[in-house]
Figure (cartoon, rainbow over the protein chains, first blue to last red):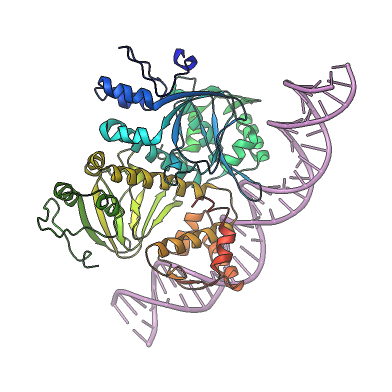
Length: 249
Length: 249
DNA sequence: CTCGAACCTTGATCTAGATCAGCTGGGTTG
DNA sequence: CAACCCAGCTGATCTAGATCAAGGTTCGAG
């Protein structure tokens, strides 16, 4: 958190022995474990740029913007989406702390979707050309990038399956739970930072259906929802419902 | 095609000046344009292994198999799919010549799905550890791998949108057309190498719906289908129908 | 050649989930 | 404080596409 308040000057590296590197960033581990030397660290430091806060509703990038950087979420939630020419919004993903946005922009050199902050968002920004160049020297980093990219293919494939509203809602809650847990938050109680409509547009449902499934899950004693607060009261059963959707996660 | 019949001995490199490298492989361009020297070529040659033919219905890998290699399709069509525990088959993709399978296996070190040949299939197999290692020395190759991975994220996202049966069918035909065209085949006439049921499981439809949409598209004069042969008679209109689905392709 | 099996088509009916409509309650504005 | 707004909830109705049922066609095996 001390890191978060520190807005570094991009391009200027620390020279001291003690090196401040963003602890939430998905890359730090890969880099640090590579037996780093001084020069490597300087490269890294030039590479990373802490940006934000973005406030609720503020856009981080927009569809068509030239792609220059990927970013790891440090805090808050980011939603990515596109709007088709009939005005329907298609939500592609929600990104929690520790997760990386912008990976799908590499192939086109443009961001293929919009990214908007759902609450107050802090980011770690990585110039992509630079991190790619660095990756040629740090195999662990290259490996990590491949892993992240591959992971996102799998994530996208989840949604594409042919599942019922119940299965998809259960899977949505179960992954949120897992992802929060992985970051040290409670897996049983968390805040839904997105609206029902966002969830609906993500899961290809109507927002009314999201409401109804929430209600039904609650009447069944699986969850307790109140406004944006949710408690998972029977994670076992949720995971069971979701297992076909999440088979490879 | 002369390449196809040539089953190279893996691990043994040519020494002659003239170097046989698979022309359909997605990596050849990246490697060749990198101002290759002798030693690089030897590495490449060790790396690549031409395998096949796989016959219709033969599996190339199965869900859970340890991941060792990615593969570029040289000829034929590969279908990837998973089966959930209610027996429903979820088709994740069809891979035409020039396209690469196995990229989504990197993150788990296991193939997350099954891959089966839909007709007679020849492959170019690349040991992943080796190609990744080579990529640290050949930036163009690393770039190409990133691009391919990123592309697949986008592809997977297509399916996940909330679109009508017509839109998805049109998008399916339009991408097939584009992909065949990119490989020098006719964009207007090609063979559907997959069954109606495969298409249905890919597009989250019932096979009956696939039949009916084909029929309707044909009655509208947009296509002509007969068994597995299809002719696109009004690609403009198809693309128009598909544009929301394909916005970023 | 017949037989059988897989694939495909077409029609009739059903249903999960969308759409439409109205209401509620908390939060913000003036 | 009232007035309003927007997210969310719930009930009533509608519909795209699934499911069920019944042929038809192609093709390989015997």
